[in-house]
Length: 289
Ligand code: G1P
Image (cartoon, rainbow, N blue to C red; front, top):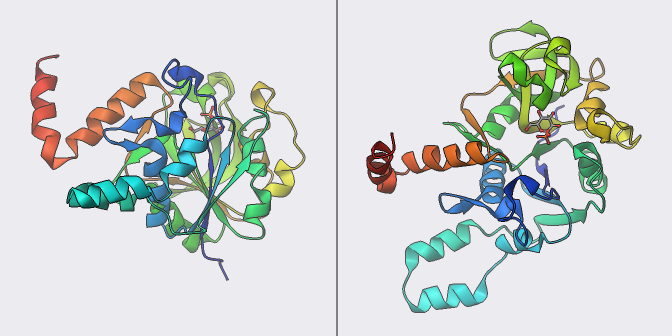
């Protein structure tokens, strides 16, 4: 029987060097898109998919991320006294139930695979989701929920995938594909950041995964891959053939918020989805183009 998906691991230890100086004293995961920090989008998406327990893989200077999901007593008291109901509701939405969030530290930047391995005690024998908060997906059905549905259908690993321009394969984990029904793709192989001439396809992994706990034993080997880092992609590749492994062409649009242009585009796309500001945003945009 397929175990229910209740856990998620969110790596948030990255230094955010691409966003300096904004991230000198602040976690990049706290950067807002419109008015909500990136990390909250990821947590809300996971909760919508049935996730109840969260593990943040953190590092130095990231405590604000954990505080963000806490109760803010003083702020609540002040808002209550001033009858600011809408703001109070917003505060409560960013609060997680007691005991549902833990953190582990990744002391050294040894790569995404190493970060995930740091959460092995939290994961135990359960399936788990991985969400990279830099990747933001605008969709009708939350991206991880789409993945969770595919997981319950296939009973194995599922990664969210999208086609990228051939010259960009060296930025992503790339799939070698088997059977393909247009939506669900059988994964035959995985390569981390291949040069375009070596890429087995143009189908790239985005930062949403449903993983089986067995991946931890391969991550634990701490083998170095692309860029001299411990790569999640390499450990996942070792699961192929042992458990069902699929890529899911999710419905939605992905924004790479780890990149300045992607981040700016996300601001516009998400603002245009907000009825109270879409008109004003559209109006000012016209003055720039
Ligand atoms: C990581 C993964 C890569 C994946 C990407 C998605 O790379 O290693 O396989 O395609 O996230 O955003 P990073 O962006 O950390 O270099």
